[in-house]
Image 1 (tube, rainbow, N blue to C red):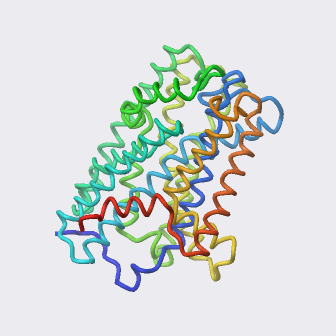
Image 2: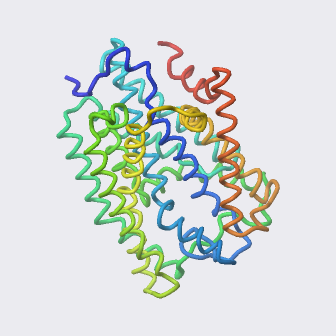
Image 3: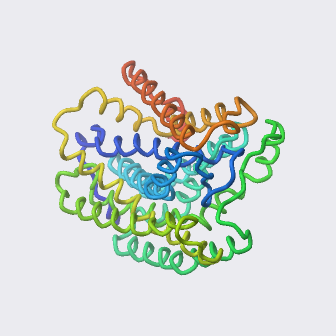
Length: 389
């Protein structure tokens, strides 16, 4: 028997303010996380970040390591897991059998992988959709299971990553002999060479992400949150949300602090650096959960939805479309295969460009909402998933 918490019909038709706000903010964090990957003309800094050229760059890098890096991805994963549970509940509430509802989740996951492959190969963007599609295929069987099975699965997978992940990163950074990765793009890249390389490498992207950047624990946490409707009815769980947010932020910040010392006041061995970075990634799971909880708290305090909040929510409703749009704009503006700003600007200016791209998305989503238009990719996804149902 399903143990998913069902929503009443009237409540299902109402969008969750907290959920849409969180998705809108998530898109900004992801754009800020991905924009340094296109800066190929500067010396590598710490992991994927480039060396600072001025004080503003230092502030951007510090903020990124503390708040964004390995925290935006877990937030995406928490919201993805939450969305899986909501989609499953919705089908059950409409009379579908559990088997059919799970099949629907699997179809969505496969199409998410397809969208991610197109983004990586044709557009050339930084993709995480394939990894989430794979996550959907791996965890869908838990949707109708009892809560204790979900929790045990989470504990087992998380413990595995806690033991293995820092060691993997330690050996990786030791083999590289550096604190930072070389640029992912080069001035000599062409669209054809980039596409051919992506065509060969794209099947390995989700494998690499799941191996080195644990997503499944955050997805399972999102499913757990959905069972208690923490973002749908946050006012009923305010104490829980406050606890999650405070503890999660504390763990996240403490886990991120050591990375900010490296290269400045601390120069550990490359293996130890990789080990520290592994725990930076793991504590980001708490950060992603805390960010989702924070927007749950915001949802309880809002008395009135002003124009800016409505725009934020409009963006959150169309997060799939605007994730792909943002990645496309990053490629167009920064990549050497297009306008090539990535070879001319510093990290601070790149961050401002990412904020500008997100702001344009906010404007476009507002226009879509005003004219009662769904996001194009949301529409395509719905047609693919439900075409025979």
